[in-house]
Length: 142
Image (cartoon, rainbow, N blue to C red; front, side, top):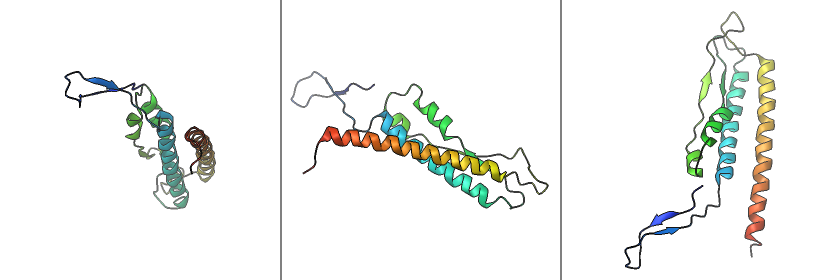
Protein backbone atom coordinates (compact mmCIF):
# COMPACT_ATOMS: atom_id res chain seq x y z
CA UNK A 1 0.00 0.00 0.00
CA UNK A 2 1.37 3.38 -0.98
CA UNK A 3 1.11 5.55 2.16
CA UNK A 4 2.90 8.58 0.84
CA UNK A 5 5.40 10.11 -1.52
CA UNK A 6 8.49 12.14 -0.75
CA UNK A 7 8.13 15.71 -1.90
CA UNK A 8 10.83 18.32 -2.13
CA UNK A 9 10.17 21.32 0.08
CA UNK A 10 8.62 24.39 -1.51
CA UNK A 11 9.06 26.72 1.47
CA UNK A 12 12.85 27.10 1.25
CA UNK A 13 13.67 24.48 3.89
CA UNK A 14 15.96 21.55 3.12
CA UNK A 15 13.83 18.79 4.65
CA UNK A 16 11.86 16.47 2.37
CA UNK A 17 8.33 15.69 3.50
CA UNK A 18 6.20 12.57 3.20
CA UNK A 19 2.82 13.60 1.79
CA UNK A 20 -0.14 11.20 1.92
CA UNK A 21 -1.43 9.75 -1.32
CA UNK A 22 -5.18 9.55 -1.79
CA UNK A 23 -6.48 7.54 -4.71
CA UNK A 24 -10.19 7.37 -5.45
CA UNK A 25 -9.70 4.46 -7.82
CA UNK A 26 -8.00 1.84 -5.68
CA UNK A 27 -6.65 -1.54 -6.74
CA UNK A 28 -10.12 -3.09 -6.66
CA UNK A 29 -11.65 -0.48 -8.96
CA UNK A 30 -8.80 -0.70 -11.45
CA UNK A 31 -8.90 -4.51 -11.26
CA UNK A 32 -12.62 -4.48 -12.00
CA UNK A 33 -12.08 -2.19 -14.98
CA UNK A 34 -9.32 -4.41 -16.38
CA UNK A 35 -11.40 -7.57 -15.77
CA UNK A 36 -14.31 -6.02 -17.67
CA UNK A 37 -11.95 -5.18 -20.55
CA UNK A 38 -10.71 -8.77 -20.57
CA UNK A 39 -14.25 -10.16 -20.53
CA UNK A 40 -15.20 -7.87 -23.41
CA UNK A 41 -12.21 -9.03 -25.46
CA UNK A 42 -13.03 -12.68 -24.68
CA UNK A 43 -16.64 -12.14 -25.77
CA UNK A 44 -15.45 -10.78 -29.11
CA UNK A 45 -13.03 -13.69 -29.62
CA UNK A 46 -15.67 -16.30 -28.74
CA UNK A 47 -18.19 -14.67 -31.09
CA UNK A 48 -15.54 -14.75 -33.83
CA UNK A 49 -15.06 -18.47 -33.18
CA UNK A 50 -18.79 -19.07 -33.64
CA UNK A 51 -18.92 -16.94 -36.77
CA UNK A 52 -16.18 -19.10 -38.28
CA UNK A 53 -17.52 -22.47 -37.14
CA UNK A 54 -17.90 -23.58 -40.77
CA UNK A 55 -14.76 -21.96 -42.18
CA UNK A 56 -12.30 -24.63 -43.37
CA UNK A 57 -8.95 -24.43 -41.59
CA UNK A 58 -10.15 -21.94 -38.96
CA UNK A 59 -8.60 -22.43 -35.51
CA UNK A 60 -10.45 -21.29 -32.41
CA UNK A 61 -8.98 -18.65 -30.11
CA UNK A 62 -9.56 -17.70 -26.50
CA UNK A 63 -8.46 -15.14 -23.91
CA UNK A 64 -7.35 -16.25 -20.45
CA UNK A 65 -8.01 -12.92 -18.79
CA UNK A 66 -8.63 -14.56 -15.40
CA UNK A 67 -5.10 -15.96 -15.28
CA UNK A 68 -3.45 -12.82 -16.58
CA UNK A 69 -5.35 -10.61 -14.15
CA UNK A 70 -4.55 -12.93 -11.23
CA UNK A 71 -0.83 -12.60 -12.05
CA UNK A 72 -1.16 -8.82 -12.14
CA UNK A 73 -2.98 -8.73 -8.79
CA UNK A 74 -0.51 -11.06 -7.05
CA UNK A 75 1.75 -8.94 -4.91
CA UNK A 76 0.65 -5.67 -6.46
CA UNK A 77 1.34 -2.47 -4.59
CA UNK A 78 -0.67 0.09 -6.51
CA UNK A 79 -3.43 0.48 -9.09
CA UNK A 80 -0.86 1.50 -11.71
CA UNK A 81 0.59 -2.05 -11.54
CA UNK A 82 -2.76 -3.38 -12.80
CA UNK A 83 -3.51 -0.63 -15.33
CA UNK A 84 -0.74 -1.92 -17.58
CA UNK A 85 -2.17 -5.45 -17.75
CA UNK A 86 -2.78 -6.56 -21.31
CA UNK A 87 -4.72 -9.59 -22.42
CA UNK A 88 -3.46 -11.85 -25.18
CA UNK A 89 -5.57 -13.76 -27.66
CA UNK A 90 -4.29 -17.34 -27.84
CA UNK A 91 -5.03 -19.53 -30.87
CA UNK A 92 -5.42 -23.29 -30.38
CA UNK A 93 -3.69 -24.72 -33.43
CA UNK A 94 -2.95 -28.11 -31.86
CA UNK A 95 -6.36 -29.71 -32.35
CA UNK A 96 -8.75 -30.38 -35.23
CA UNK A 97 -12.40 -31.25 -34.76
CA UNK A 98 -13.11 -31.97 -38.41
CA UNK A 99 -11.36 -33.16 -41.53
CA UNK A 100 -11.28 -29.63 -42.95
CA UNK A 101 -8.96 -28.53 -40.12
CA UNK A 102 -11.54 -26.45 -38.22
CA UNK A 103 -11.49 -27.02 -34.45
CA UNK A 104 -14.54 -25.02 -33.33
CA UNK A 105 -17.04 -26.96 -31.20
CA UNK A 106 -20.24 -24.90 -31.36
CA UNK A 107 -21.63 -26.33 -28.10
CA UNK A 108 -18.41 -25.60 -26.21
CA UNK A 109 -18.25 -22.06 -27.63
CA UNK A 110 -21.87 -21.39 -26.62
CA UNK A 111 -21.09 -22.61 -23.09
CA UNK A 112 -18.00 -20.36 -22.98
CA UNK A 113 -20.09 -17.40 -24.18
CA UNK A 114 -22.67 -18.01 -21.44
CA UNK A 115 -19.97 -18.31 -18.78
CA UNK A 116 -18.28 -15.14 -19.99
CA UNK A 117 -21.59 -13.25 -20.03
CA UNK A 118 -22.16 -14.23 -16.39
CA UNK A 119 -18.62 -13.10 -15.52
CA UNK A 120 -19.23 -9.71 -17.14
CA UNK A 121 -22.60 -9.27 -15.42
CA UNK A 122 -21.02 -10.12 -12.05
CA UNK A 123 -18.22 -7.63 -12.61
CA UNK A 124 -20.76 -4.98 -13.58
CA UNK A 125 -22.75 -5.60 -10.38
CA UNK A 126 -19.65 -5.31 -8.20
CA UNK A 127 -18.50 -2.16 -9.99
CA UNK A 128 -21.96 -0.60 -9.61
CA UNK A 129 -21.90 -1.31 -5.87
CA UNK A 130 -18.43 0.25 -5.55
CA UNK A 131 -19.54 3.38 -7.42
CA UNK A 132 -22.58 3.70 -5.12
CA UNK A 133 -20.25 3.51 -2.11
CA UNK A 134 -18.19 6.35 -3.58
CA UNK A 135 -21.33 8.38 -4.30
CA UNK A 136 -22.45 7.91 -0.69
CA UNK A 137 -19.03 8.94 0.62
CA UNK A 138 -18.92 12.03 -1.58
CA UNK A 139 -22.43 13.09 -0.61
CA UNK A 140 -25.18 14.75 -2.59
CA UNK A 141 -24.13 16.84 -5.56
CA UNK A 142 -25.80 20.21 -5.76
